[in-house]
Length: 165
Image (cartoon, rainbow, N blue to C red; front, side, top):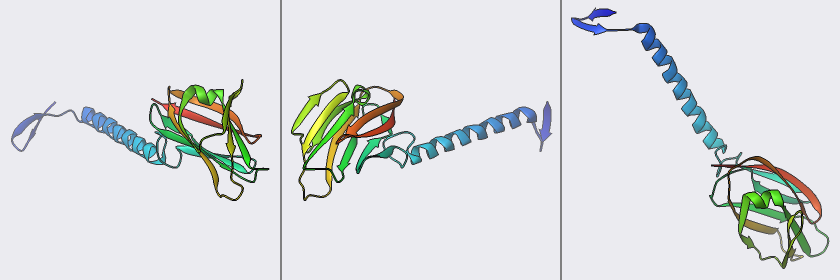
């Protein structure tokens, strides 16, 4: 359809232009949703939804809920009121298949491989607070929601994690 606008002859297809505007706005909303997802942590690495915390008796496990493939991450365990001055952490096989452990701070007194995973034993100072262990980990393969079940000083914990490409 031709239309003369102030002396110029211009082809205008108003219905086509309105469809284009509609899909352009849909694209804008999609980009806005992607930015919001990144800000709240749904793309991993930072944000309130990218990490989680579970309790195992009086101990707590801070874990990466959403990680990025081959990006450094961490898992921390805070020992609560445990009997004596020793603590154990069992990292399950499901977790060890998806992550490699790069460093453990402080160093464990011993590490035992079991059918359920790796069991780390630590000597804990009775008067030091907080009594924490930090694992520097790296995700090795993209994984969509997987569940890990382990123990801290014999108390069970469970969490799910996702590794994004």
